[in-house]
Amino acid sequence: MNVNKLTAAIAVTAALGLSLAACGGSDPTSGKKSASDTITVGSAAFPENEIIAEIYAQGLAAKGVKVKKHLNIGAREVYIPALKKGEIDLLPEYSGNLLGYLSKDSTATAESDVEAALAEALPSTLKVLDASKAEDKDSLNVTPGFASKNSLKSIADLAKVKGLKLGANPEFKTRPYGIPGLEKTYGVKGVKFTAISDGGGPATLKALLKGKVDVADIYSTTPSILANKLVTLEDPKNLIAAQNVIPLINAKKDSAKVQGILNAISAQLTTADLLDLNSKNQGKDKTAPAVLAKQWLTDKGLI
Amino acid sequence: MSVVSQAVDWLSESSHWSGDDGVPHRLVEHLGYTAETVVIASAIAIPIGLLIGHTGRMRSLAVGVSGALRSLPTLGLLTFVVTLIGIGLTPAIVALVVLSIPPLLAGAYSGLESVDRQTIDAARAIGMTEWQILTKVEVPLALPLIVGGIRSATLQVVATATVAAYIGLGGLGRYIIDGQAVQDYPQMLAGSFLVVALALVLDGIFAGLQKLALGSRPSLTPSRA
Image (cartoon, rainbow over all chains, first blue to last red; front, side):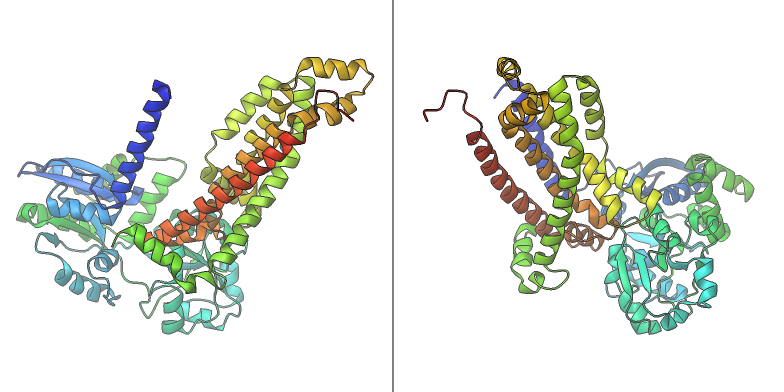
């Protein structure tokens, strides 16, 4: 074995070791805690969350709060521990998913129930501030043609469609809001399920538009819903849990000043804003999250 | 309990071995995708590889193109094809065929290049046509390397056919993708074990075939008969 091969072998072994260690729950974000008067704003690793984090960060900075950014952190399993340890201090969360993470058996789905349950489920080290009206949640969508042909307005109307084909992420098959919930809450039975793992992205959209599926689970703030005039089915029985954007903050960094700024932001943020911000970010303009955040804050008179 | 032992438990659970989502059915699907891919890719790549190897022309073009194909990320390609034609078996097979063309092509042309020039000149001297030279001299002598190309293409496809599950198809990738969706790490690992085991079995079979190909090469020494 020559030196190059040996180096390569060591590198591969080390990489394997690292990735296995990562599976074991080690913390890739581990870093130093921020100074006591600085707020480190984090975000999950998708554009919308990054945009809201930028809004928080720039909103705080404009009012004289010292801010550091640590955006694009993988999954909840990673960033919640980081928040608890104070490696990041503030992050935009979604009420229902956060509740699901904190208390696996929670059955709350209506907006107020979710927020009440959330307040109880949070550990003492973490706090949520006022929730915004903006929601990014799973939503069941059909094409305008399919909706008018079967006169569909709400998920309940799906019960009368025979041989319904539904496309969604794989977890939709087993989660309470998915196939089991459709049957239990709305009496929609015999659904033919296709797992498409792109979170309501281009593959799911194409499947819906080409009729490979009749109903597609697409997140409610996805630009393609507007662009293709998809009909989002109403959910009168709250099958899908509320997912209001809500600031999650380390209790130690929670001051009257910070609360005031973030609550003012939440008071103005709407689902339509998120759709618009996402469209500008993912559309042909590809405007950067920091730029979008500044525009939004300026438009709303917050900076 | 470690994820590894949970994965072993997952594999020994009898309910995971029956029905549409059971291991035998997923295994058959996975082998089906693999076989279909390798057959289609071979039909494209091997004739081209033989042509290049026989004529010695367009070699640098083939090296360049297959190098470029090699660097295409399969998942990205799959998503791209899906946005063009929608979900279904075709985009998955297209993406996997692209992945498996480079090793097949390389096996075919390097196999032919490895044949001793003097042997070919001798064949030409005794009046063989180009077609006879190709089919009776070059291909038999190059067979171990051609089979080697099929072998490495098959292994790559077996490992990568897991992406088919990304767009709602079956195969062993279902365990990995469905497991990831609900943080069922034992199921993901069990799925990976199955892919590795399948790859090892197929590699063993191809190693045997390659030996057979080596043994069946025409002898260059005069036969004793």
